[in-house]
Image (cartoon, rainbow, N blue to C red; front, side, top):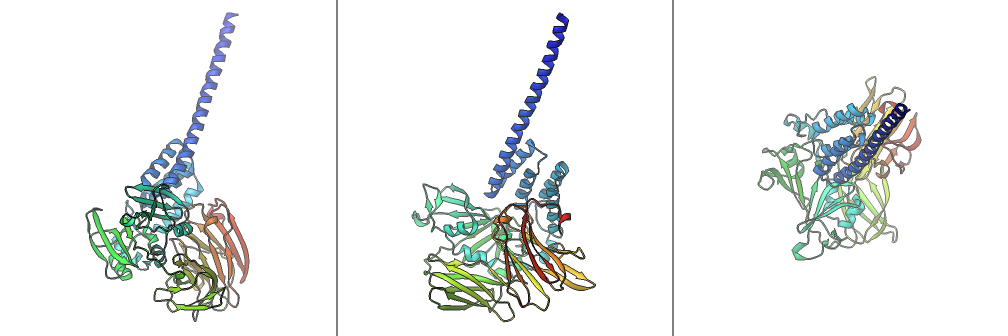
Length: 517
């Protein structure tokens, strides 16, 4: 009897030990998952604040707790990519796919490599000087950005680029980061006056203007910027006042020049060539003088070339008085006008282009700066033009056009669709630095599917302010706005033998490119 009781007791102990061990591992797993989620959230916060070291550490800590989930790999990839560390970013995506078999990671890897395959970047993300002239040939200054930098106050930055995600005092200066722009704005009280920084809230006053800006990526400062720009090209677009000299404080060579009243410095090599998209930079802003009540400025660009369009007539018609003001764009496509604050109809005209019309509001305080407005050249018979524009975020939306009959596809990696030597459709402009335009022209009628993809899977498509404008001969342009919601693939419309069929659907976490129409 005693022996039987002993055996029962031993069995009970074994069961209890097993349950205890199982419970311990379950609790440990739950604890790891909680820590993982916290660190991923922390990493995203640091990334939005451009605190790359802290973000990298947070995502690596998360991976240590759970190497089987894709989110930490995506976060770490974004941190490395933001710093121009191309090879390391690729390695993280490869490692993540190896461990998780995530289709989302595989697609990011394929897209990232495809967009950068011709750049010949080294381990630090520096572009080879051998093809620097080629990749910088189409680079131009982001005129619209500088119009805003020299005109905006803190309140306007919040309206344009989203809420402040980080604000920290650094000595006597305040550093601010906005949600939709990879940049650090520095504020300080000029000449001892307490007019810029609210010392209690540690935030700028609404009418305060920053004194300097540092950009996360130079693709924000330049249009059509891939990874670098030659010294000669920089001088051709920024002016001959560009000088290259050794900067003792930064311990590197820097290009220095003035543009639109801003003093700009960018890290470069001893020849003045800028070889990294994440190169150190600083923009010193001019003091904003008290503008007249009611002024507007902006830029008109050619939807097919992406360049500023000279000689465009911009008509401003007051909704209250009917008074009309007309100005003309300069060689850069820029325009500026003084007008009483209020509501206006803007009509944009140039021979050979389709007329544009929109409603605008000229603010009472400060200068009103309109986003770049693309205008489309007139179309030939049977042609269709599709123009995509969006806001400051996501950084890179990509337009796709699929031939539903031949299964051919136009996108950033294949910019022309041909049949029997005849051009059927073409990607005219591929914009990678926010706002657009990204333009596709269809030359031959057929059956096509048009959709837009968030290249970086930033989850911001629904709030991107993305708009697709479709031009067809003899018809008024059709405007389609992205619906609210989650997703990285926007099915916009189809064309069936020249007839438009609007779909306007946003798909969530769609990463299997093989199933796209």
